[in-house]
Image (cartoon, rainbow, N blue to C red; front, side):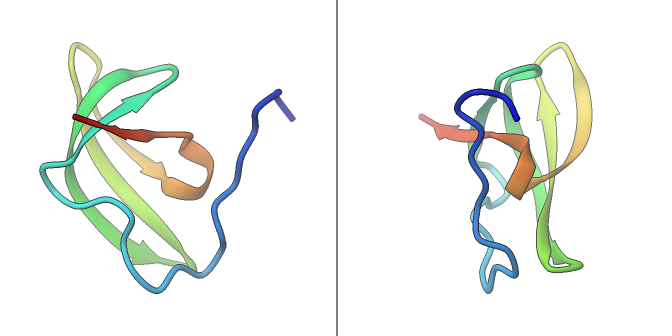
Length: 68
């Protein structure tokens, strides 16, 4: 594991991210959440990253943070 690796609790009961949320990802940079769904015991988040396109990420391993 990388230093600083964090995991979120599995089997979330509500979404951590919502459409319109601004996020920061260590590899993809800043982006805007397009959609978020609970799927297979985790949250799948679709994000439009500036200059990187649209990515689907699993919230528990993506290491994204909400930004203002």
